[in-house]
Length: 318
Image (cartoon, rainbow, N blue to C red; front, side, top):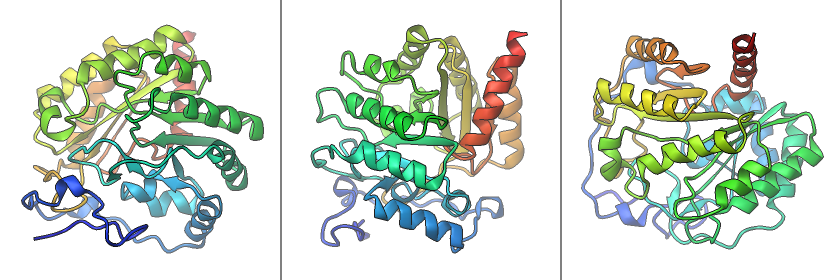
């Protein structure tokens, strides 16, 4: 039996207590196109030191992102606010689960300071789910956006939020802070929600993204899914249609990778040419930007993609 243990903060506490007693799920061997280099550059070390010095968490580490070496070498880190413990237990996610600690009132300022030290032109801020909070952490998101604006006025801000399920008024608080990009990931197709994302509701997430554009049409909206979880091609295309019906601008599609044997198995490694096909179909459906590849992740190349997103909107407005 494999026990998933949090070796970062408490070696005695299981990182995913709800998964400890699950049977192992075997995934097929990784193909060559999914392999990446181990992070060992000076830039990577510098980014890690700044993150540590400011007492921050990153989704790059907590979710085991395969692109961490490339991104941190360029001093591109995705900050994860509101702690490192999530109140949900999605079958795909490596972020640890349990009851989170109280919010850190100094965190927004600490994030802003780290953004300044890294010299980021574009920053991505995400968070754990905080179902324990009355507003799901919406005001904390807003405070973080405002702190970055004050410290780094020229930095563009992209947020990747939870779904704020049953948190009335929370979305409005975040949108009022005016991030440049509002991202909320669907993660998978509707038929897989009960096994992959049981705490979420697909059409609530679609409506959340639609509501952002209703509140502020100038904000770019973005969403992403993983493939390799047992979905069918026609289901992926339906997700595209649903997102376009919500006027979503940017779609990301990446390969699901199994964090441990206690997580959902990889049902299939999707070859690169199939990702290319998805990208072509998505553009025909009207997305301003599409990123689809095995190693695509929500915040991978986010700064470059934001520049292309603005250019695409400007071209459409002519």
